[in-house]
Length: 361
Length: 261
Image (cartoon, rainbow over the protein chains, first blue to last red):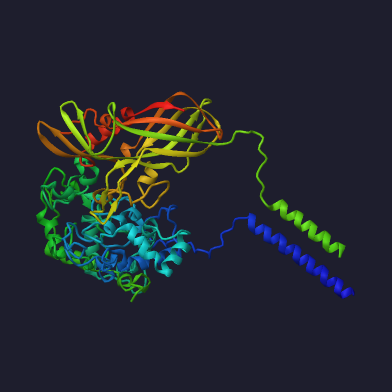
């Protein structure tokens, strides 16, 4: 009897607890979805500080989704081209071609596919003219352009929704169904993780055991520091700014101003012919060079800076290094040393990093 | 057993305590609804697409008139502002549009009214709104609220290279002395985001008692005021000075309140 009484008391208490907890669940709004894992990028030694991005915070799951999308051909209209079609990891995410024509229309593009790394710091505009203000907005360009992926954004949403994995991942990361705005957010998250800071130069700077530079490379480093670092500045080896480096003296206004550089987006005459400074990191992987890939080799680039610069009203004053005249004089030996140093900026860990490689392979 | 019953009773009480009940309403008037109509006009005539209008020596025939109305606010007689949340509306009168170089078609649409709900009951004396999209949303196309979208052709390829919505877009044909030219007058970029405040001709009482109406006139002819559209038939980012003059027209001349109810 006593035992029975005790039992019913316990069950009554249990019932009470159950009822209370049941009605608690109905009033307290707690997220029931699996937890997202927020992460912060690790800033390599000597790199500039990173500005937080509260509008699209990084999560492990968001980055993973972005990586999948980056390599997925379904992002294009014909389902044949992915972002990686023009951005190959083994070439520091460029394509080795001056101007490619792999897009949906087969039209040769007007600009060279840029390398993709250290983009978390690229907060001063994207594209060669900086017209795009952030990685998220940038992605709509190649996604929709007829000569690139030419994707119908609503069709893209439908296509991705049909795959249960994507539907689940979008729900988890953005707590929404598949939307094109979230496609570009995920792509941006993945691209912000493409950090390249593992070259021999970096190991030298960090005093690591296998980080030695030869005499020639060291003298090349000193030369680069004195002649090139005004624009290729900081440990990013770019100022993420825009310069007219004298590759042309006249800038045609054809094709919606594509040849006019930053003027095309700012309409400030001082920006005529200015293009974004590319990083010197991974330079020997990212030939050909310039916004239109006109220089096939690093030698051609050095020729340009030594004696090929065209003088126009907008040619950057930083290039007048020849006793007040335009040009950056270099002896044959100096050029050899500069190329030797640039070689040390190649980051093989980056180009072989499995975490950023094609997940479909 | 009695204990058990009392525990169940207590738990029922607890449960009803934590379930949400509607607050008792003392004031009979609650928040109300207002319809704002942006009636498109060309001068004194009603606007329509595919119809000839005369302006001075020019004949204009339009295929579209589209613009973003954002950040709508109502100001009451005490000067307090009620900001309508997520208010980004695409107002338009357009034939079918090929979007993304024909990747898909946006259907012919006429939309001149926006409905604002849950406005606190009160007497309102003026309306505020902006033409275009403010920089927070204009600078990041992945942040979407209200009706902002990439799917309606108010960002296009050449504009996507430069992050911005198209704030206003008027297209069609202009003919002068027998010479016809295609017309496309658009504005965009942060500098051309403009805010407008208009006093209402009479106090509008908004409450649950009735649906209030505010009628505005949106005069397409005024948007082209001072612009020689024969010399400059294509206005957009590549014509920043003319584009800015058009944006100023939108903020100073295009909109007026015609009636309230």
